[in-house]
Length: 149
Image (cartoon, rainbow, N blue to C red; front, side, top):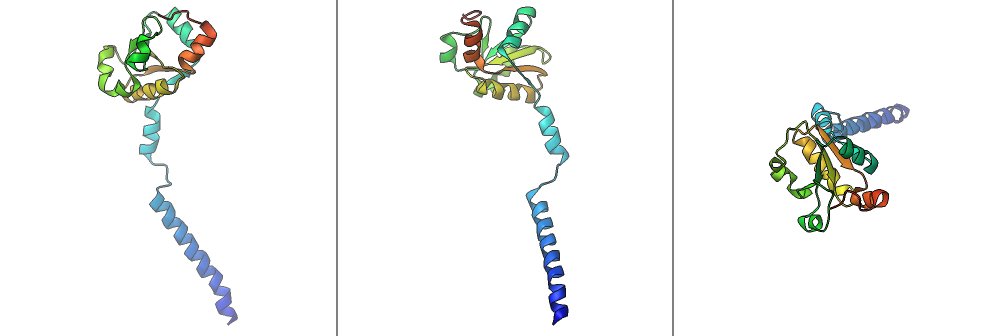
């Protein structure tokens, strides 16, 4: 009887080990190359409004992409900005009519939609994409209405 008690924990341990192993395999808890490749595709840079203004002021070749709705855009936007709502980026990015190496600064009201647009543009192969953190709300706090048309 003591032998049965001695071997019982080993059997239970083996059973638990096999169960955990099966769970790991089924749940896909491994780091596959496709997961790594997908995360490497999404490359854009978050920048402050100060960094964005410096880029715009020092490099007239920067495209300002306002990704708010058309109704928001017509109420006011940064001078020279092009408007394509964030939810239309993947369908309408051809309207930008720019080389995929061109610097694109995406902006919205608070930075969330522009982050989504920056991710989409990066997935589409644009390599110099920037998201303005804090969006136009932060721009107003720092610069007021300057560069706003």
